[in-house]
Image 1 (spheres, rainbow, N blue to C red):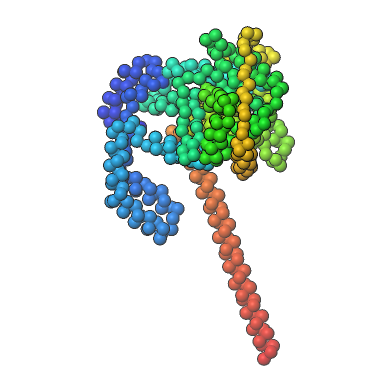
Image 2: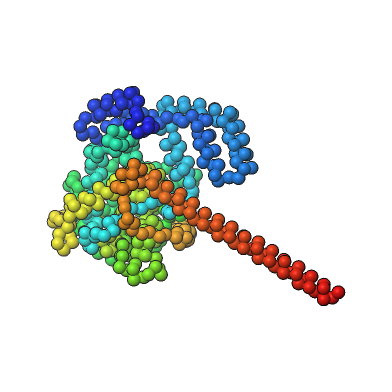
Length: 491
């Protein structure tokens, strides 16, 4: 990875040949894990030099001189000792920084996950294979579970750069059966080996939906039947239940204390919370409809947020009480059949979830499919037990914390100024033909946009300052002329 293009050393080429030789013609997802090289520790002088180079354009002469002096002192003093610790850790850890990054960047943060950390994925913009909410949810659940089956078997092609350099697949391990558990000072990640149910939220009520029956995975039509039973349920939320998920959208320390209160409140609340946290993932059946409506946006003429803006904001934060932000990912299915995903960030980066989402959408549309009237293929099963309604006994102090978290989360959500649009000029294919990664391309685009905006603001500010200075000089000259004329008349 660190060699210039087409200039790998003989040792590196030999390593690549051995990797391909022993991995076979159809390597499994984790086939290369044992052969991956350890992450090298960069030289201290190189790190300090790159830090100074990156800060130089952002600081004035005095500030940069002070930073340069502090950097050199660090390099010759404390930095050397810390560098030895890093090298020592790199000898026994496959990645000397990943555990610290996970803990200090993600798990120790006390800010809300919503907006600040979690991210989202959208459905197809121009295609909606069915407008039947239960049918779309049934196919979605079945497609996700098919992906989990492949993941458990390792039957997913590992990612390789240029078809030769294998990439680490460790982040796939915690995709399912994973929940971020809040703590007073730091959160923890709870990962189970298996989970055979998913929790569903609809109209402020929680349900436990079993994914297996008689030892087999439920088919898409059977899952549609179970989801439809939830949609047809007319029971009302229990006191405090409707906004309960807002706890996961609020500050982490407050959620940790409320969670302990909830666990102590009653066996029913403990069982309900464990069902949510021990589920394979989370499913939210929204009562709203969202999606890309280009004709509607053209008629609005930019006077209000576009349909794509509203769609993106809904996936990012929803109503602040209809996503369980602690789960590894929350699937969202809207009333009009559109869908999306909200993912927690600490367990993996976005490309891992992106691979899941691409496979799931392709499986939904091109493998599973729908009938002419928009129903899942297959037959319903009258012998299936209905989904189990979860019951909560929420104590008063917990209800108060729910309201506080909801108010803070809605303030945060209202502060998000979001504009999303469909860019149709070109895509990642052109970017890759230019021998650039899409990620690097977008980073450069953001930096260029920032430069152009700040340069424009600087130009306007300078013009304003010059105009003000000229006007001041003109006013002063006019005052002096008036004073001289008055003096002459008096004389």
